[in-house]
Image (cartoon, rainbow over all chains, first blue to last red; front, top):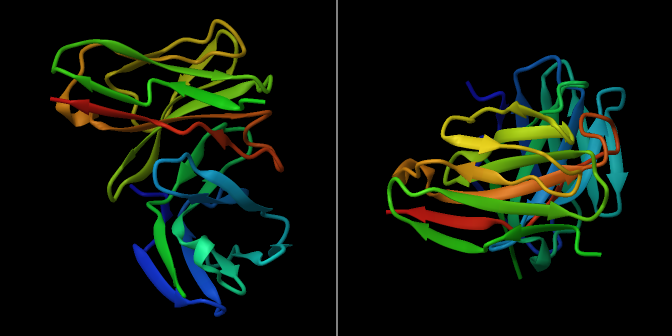
Length: 112
Length: 115
């Protein structure tokens, strides 16, 4: 069973507009959520995270929103830039389990 | 500061051969882990370690073996390679996984093909 789901395999957005990437999870014990960005032939790089005690975390152009009742998180990128074109993974962890569970990824393409 | 270093970058094996994927980190991280990435499957956890001498299984441990004799190194062993193990393998480390503000740092991966 997939505990972390990214239901959109791909997304295309115009440069300057907002990109919204979504992630759903099933395990109510998850309390730490992360987003990673991955370019081809490279390892994933950490982007932004949020703990379950918050519902929003911002870092520059990137904002992550957490809706615990819906078991849903989203990553907003504003404004989107061509360099943001990559695969984005969300991940979740339950405190003390030492396991990060990843979603299947969403490929974002930002069109110039 | 090299971060997480994985070797080799590419490897082709025949079915039944064995090999070890190497992973080293120079950040003195206690936590290390191995993932495999397959199309449509995302990143799946194979094994992880919370410190030297301590390892545990992840989501897909079958066919893989690990040990952690030092803080720096966490090799992944394939005892008898199978075509189903064709994948890209990523090693990752963290100061203290599972705690807030302790994200994983990834290496650049090893692309393994088993024929």
